[in-house]
Image (cartoon, rainbow, N blue to C red):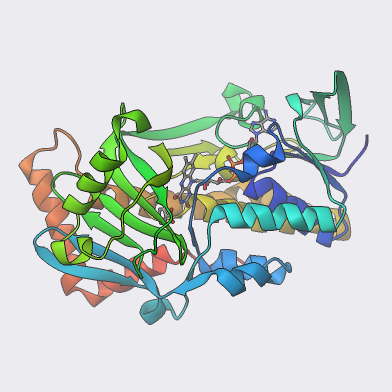
Length: 391
Ligand code: FAS
Ligand code: PHB
């Protein structure tokens, strides 16, 4: 098989890139290791930045989002024994977030690929990248008992943190930046009406979070030791812990019930540079990971797709290579901004085991500055809504 761009990974980054390249008449094939059912069964992000919403609308993928998604003026922060705070993105930036789950987006993307006859090959095993330093790379994979080969001009590595693309770049050409955290987010889904707002709650015992998927589906998280598993958190313990970390008047509004999903999300800050090597580009979690405290992971995947599709269209349609050459540096500027705000919010909102009283006082002062300073409020809203794309 020959194509112009071979995309490894059928998650949000890979599928969105495939959809956008198709819309621009650029031939591409997506190779996904898992079954479609497996991919669509993943429960992950829930908040979309303004830019992500705009991209989905611009490429004809916004219909269901605009029907069932919930525009949000911001996200609330509650703080034990202090007034609460609202990250008011609407007031300070004039833009809104959108509450619309990643699972819905992946469903919409697969449906659009089907509708448009997109080439998405699921259950592609042992995907391997070849000759990425040349202008004629190829990809091999196994399926139905045979080994297949795809010749292409470029490879887009959209295969997440554990995929092969990042590791296809020689160690001598890669720089990795990492921050691991001694805790994770134990998350549940429950078929109960959610609170109106997305809420991060800081408490001396640990952080808690209230999120939503639709009027009858809520998502909640509690900070838990990284060594914990869902088996350590039976529903009774989860709800008791969650409610204890919210102020009583808010906890009274949380509708609990039997959870239909429970999983532990480890927190990690990670960036691999550069995001291009020869004919290989990286996009999404394949190149970077952010802690979910800031709702940036999924949105960064769309950010990378925005810059990568722009570069590939310029190359294939106008014969220009400057955006290709600049892709990594341009994408990384926005990646590092998202890493920065995600790291700062993670430090602000979590209890770090073993931290000293000085660090606790600094955290409280960071929060008090938000309460008292319009400049600090504006700056946080500007980063939380997502920085504008570079033109
Ligand atoms: P993805 O990991 O989504 O997709 C990569 C795809 O590549 C997968 O389908 C995988 O099966 C495939 N793949 C892997 N190896 C392959 C191979 N060898 N061959 C072919 N295909 C291969 N972000 C938020 O903003 N908010 C959240 O609350 C949030 N919660 C999260 C919870 C968890 C448990 C995880 C893991 C992530 C969470 N994220 C969250 C981040 C998440 O949403 C990612 O940022 C988003 O999925 C990135 O999309 P992709 O880059 O497409 O990577
Ligand atoms: C979610 O909806 O699951 C969500 C929202 C905001 C975050 C993290 C997770 O920062």
